[in-house]
Image (tube, rainbow, N blue to C red):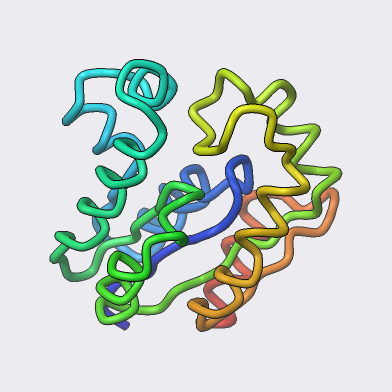
Length: 164
């Protein structure tokens, strides 16, 4: 088990789960959204607003293609899955885990996602985003962990560790 890569929709809990999982395994931790924000010196929404969605997606893809690491839990941005080149690199680095969260739960967690740095076209609904991305999450993942309403973060991490 070299690296563990968490993929899933925005609001699925990848970042928080990744921190806990890395701590439990004694691994490093990388959040690609935070890395992009630091590199660009802007929030994700700020990047999308000032430089456009295509620029953001290309930047995210570039980050995914360039990652080289060992014994790291990587929490990807929700749209990283749309870059075939990034996903091919990530697949070569370790185990891909899809954090599957029901649409109703995502809506609760995200609220008004228009200002949350979610990579989507203007007016695109969360349902449309999920419909576009879900086949890719399933295609690239080695393991699927389904969040059940009421599960704690620790229970979800326990489930991930059991499946690994």
